[in-house]
Amino acid sequence: MDDKKILLSEKDMPKKWYNVLPDLPEELPPPINPATGKPVTPEDLLPIFPRGLIEQEMSPERWIEIPDDVLRAYSLWRPTPLVRAKALEEYLGTPARIYYKNESVSPPGSHKPNTAVAQAYYNKVEGVRRLTTETGAGQWGSALSFACNLFDLKCTIYMVRISFEQKPYRKSLMQAWGAEVFPSPTDRTEAGRKIRASDPDSPGSLGIAISEAVEDAATHEDTKYSLGSVLNHVLLHQTVVGLETKEQLALVDEEPDVLIGCVGGGSNFAGFFLPFVPDKLKDGKDIRFVAAEPTSCPTLTKGLYAYDFGDTVGLTPLLKMYTLGHNFVPPKIHAGGLRYHGDAPVLCLLVKKGVVEAVAYRQNAVFEAAVTFARTEGIVPAPETAHAIEAVIDEALKCKETGQERTIVFNFSGHGHFDMSAYDQYFSGKLPDYELPEEEIKRALGELPTVE
Image (cartoon, rainbow, N blue to C red; front, side, top):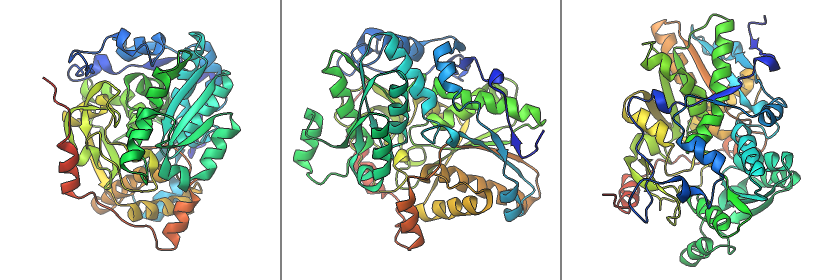
């Protein structure tokens, strides 16, 4: 076997998703219906989600079968390679062994279609004709467009306005797969009109775009809403990443010491490390899980663990999570997929319990890491993914200082081929660093909803 690239055959692809809920250190706090103040019921969610996904969201089962149609779609790009980053190791002069799970080989170029394909399938079998969603940097919108095209569904995407302007080719990619794409906030929804009335030049946010997409779905009978991160069923679908990684590491007799991923809403990192949680909590293995986020949107490192809306207007259930406040509008950083005020409740609980560590980085350090990776390993990473790479480099250099041999594994969640305008700004010295001021955090957290 090639000791640089570790491949699995199609027959080795996981046939079941792993559900971490039975293995959490304590029960996950339930979503709350803001209208009743009580835990959300399946019927509460039916206006926006198909029943199949609602059942997965609330399932206590540890393993959930992957439908054959989803497996066939996965086989277009899965299993993905696990790659030994030997050139990066040599450049850093570290005794650490660095591996990355390359999710950029999917048709949309990221990990996102792992859940997009599944969500499109479950909507299709229940007779849904159109899906709505939000997208930040455009990776999720690209993935859902791709999935809807596979299953002959219409797709409407509300793209955060600043990303719509910064990343025009992401919009083109979505349109190539048949989606309609609008810069959010728009005049198409009551939520969008409300935001534009108060701030005509609003750069948008994922919270605003979610409000628009949810409203669109809830007001059309043939339409459902699709979310690319945060919720349990999304993390569930992404566990194919971690399950494959476990198999691949076993093939080269490796045990991971550190697992690293970037975090916006939490789907790529959670899907990557959750299958290893029982190894740590039940089997007592000494594995560190490290979440990397931007200093401009420091949800895990500076947010409050509290119930909050998943969107800006308040259309979603209340989720117990680390949050910067649902009214938070993040700065215009280029890692658009990391500009979200909250994070997945499962991930947040594990951070709260000390199972997961969180670190935050500035933009220029992140892009320096991205360029280092591109010049050693040959792939240009997405700005989001580059946060994980910066954390990897930090860990590898610590190993260099101490002389410790560690196995560091990270999720290469997406390539940066549609993010070159950000690289242009970095190379020209025009990329600003930004650390969110404490007063901004306090202001946004002061507007959290009250939960009895």
